[in-house]
Length: 388
Length: 248
Ligand SMILES: Nc1ncnc2c1ncn2[C@@H]1O[C@H](COP(=O)(O)OP(=O)(O)OP(=O)(O)O)[C@@H](O)[C@H]1O
Ligand SMILES: [Mg+2]
Image (cartoon, rainbow over all chains, first blue to last red; front, side):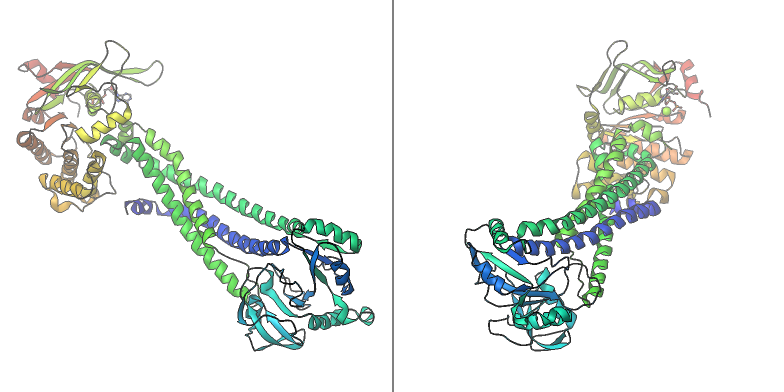
């Protein structure tokens, strides 16, 4: 209480200092929440790709994908160490050029069961049911973000690429790619895919023979990296084979950039907030020289004086942290609400991020308090008493 | 029995390499337990400096002339560390200053509680002690007032309550009535006298006021960094001049 009163004494200066730190913490919270989301996406992908190889021609992420033939599946199955090979069609949900942050909305055509139960990336169903072997026609299982965007529920209808689909299920959130996926039977996706090809190409392909990628599950005890080499040898150089390490190498850099930005923001707020807190507290100490003299004279130890200054300084940090966190939380919530309609939920403010931000702010305040606290505790009581 | 006894107390302030002030030039002083003693002398004679040594706010100079000795009871406190001196100030001494020196942001009782806190008296016991001390100085009803809301005389009484609250062996007061008019001054003095009489509280005070000096058991007179008269024998008439030789 006394502490708040002491802060209140120097309203303007304290307010400025607190605002300075609060802005830093707010930035920390916003970027941290974004990094959380990114990392969850990348982590999900990383887990997904860890135990398998994915064969394609061209790079899906670079948009240079060319169709594979289902006969490739048999070629792959013949490779030593392959337990299962699951063909799939992956394509953009629509051709709109609107850029999305995070993973794009995708159509995934699959043959349920073709993984022979080897897929370890488990999704759970929130409504309806999963896609089953034997499902045909325009049926779709939607990821949670996509379902929200399309305002769909199990049993309802949605329109995908101009066609009406029956929603047979909706997945629980995974925080990664499947949240923006529309999963449908391979044959259905093949038809949609063919319709996107240029007419010249279309005339020369058979829809039911197409895939954009083939997911290869290694047999027990076979290292995906080793299998990758065998697949490359068997398929030739026009095919590209991606394993977990490739994925990590490709997207790990994004993670690094985010960490750098985050560290930069943290560093800046450390510098700005820390210096202005040191300044505020140094002035507070100077203003209270006489008071410190009184306290020292009547028996306050040096340690007590130091503690007083550090605690007050930490309180400045904590208050600033709370304000910054509140604004940051409001901003991420607002951005998420705005983005939800378009499926762009970009921020994930976790308890850990919030706690880190508060701890960081409080620690920063306390640390900044040490400098003036030291000076305050070294004052000679008699000299301090005489100070005007 | 002497509660404070000092010998060879010297203090030199060094302003620069060449410029130094010998504020105390070897003082010998003895304060008996239960005494109320006044220290008088012209301005600059070293009264405050001596009070700082007696109050363990400063240590006597160790390294010129015979080693200084300062006994509090039977403990030589002449060369204790800052922490040890602070602890003694907190638990065994009370201070009253000329300009009251209350913490402006704290209420009367909070100021008194501060001294409890440093003396290791906590919680309910501290509150009771603080209220009792404020009651003793007649300010129980002003406990919640800030210093700015109190008159000078009232502020000094709060300061006395703060000095008393830890039941100190000795109260040191440097010109406690220096900033008060004669009526307030008489009140404060009467209060100190009362604690001395009723509780046997040892009090050392510095004053320029001959009337205040007269009200004490003994007057120690200083001049030019030395004690000229320790007041133990009847004051020689010539010495009385010191008491009035005070610049306005
Ligand atoms: N911090 C200091 N630095 C330098 N010189 C000082 C300091 N404090 C006191 N002095 C000098 O020491 C001498 C004694 O000062 P002191 O304050 O003890 O006198 P005093 O008897 O209390 O005077 P007064 O009656 O005016 O309060 C004076 O000459 C003073 O100028
Ligand atoms: Mg003085």
